[in-house]
Image (cartoon, rainbow, N blue to C red):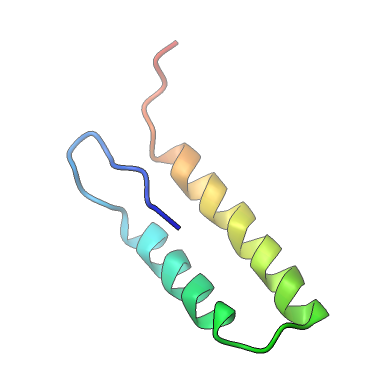
Length: 57
């Protein structure tokens, strides 16, 4: 999953950690548990990415 760039060009460590967790999870066999965990990680990723962007309005 691509990481949105920050204004200073750096990536937050938290986003890197969530990306690593998603990569490890995708290496596991498909299951209902993996699906639920993936959805939860995507929610966390979205919250972190959204919080890392300066509001323009």
